[in-house]
Length: 203
Image 1 (tube, rainbow, N blue to C red):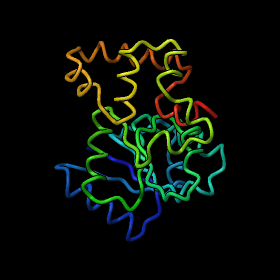
Image 2: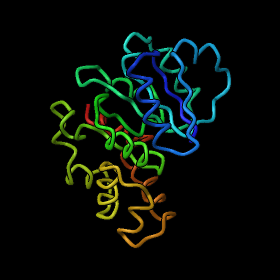
Image 3: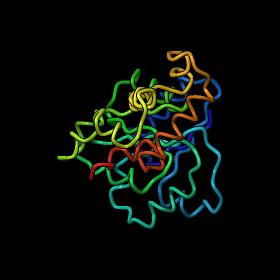
Image 4: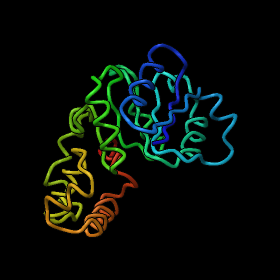
């Protein structure tokens, strides 16, 4: 596994990198600051996963967030503090598959990476609990009004719970190709490009 860690070099980041390298054989983790990453990167880099320390994004202007998004073509995991305005990053950076608390325990952290590497999504916060007053809209009635079938609603809920295509295909006794087709239909009907956009769909 080739991973990128975007953050400052300190005891916390070095500890996280050590956990990753101890948990995966042949793991290689590159630590870069946001500034160095943007200065060095003119072409999208090939990584299995990019882990971004939310603290480093706090002072980033919107154009830098866009540059980061353009240079990353792999799944992204944010490590954040609950009080950080991390929701706005989901609107600016593509391929976000996870947002978890920076102080999550090791087992949860590694499990999150495994889920993301297998194409799933993982969040420390329930998708409904972080919405503003529009949270009640994200329910079966809302999904049905958008034209989702019962099967698509079932798949959507599993995706938001972090299930991978393989896990969903096994549970529903359908091929992974069929599940991918359903997911494409779900995104099209809801008018979003990725499942992380559902955090903001009701705003």
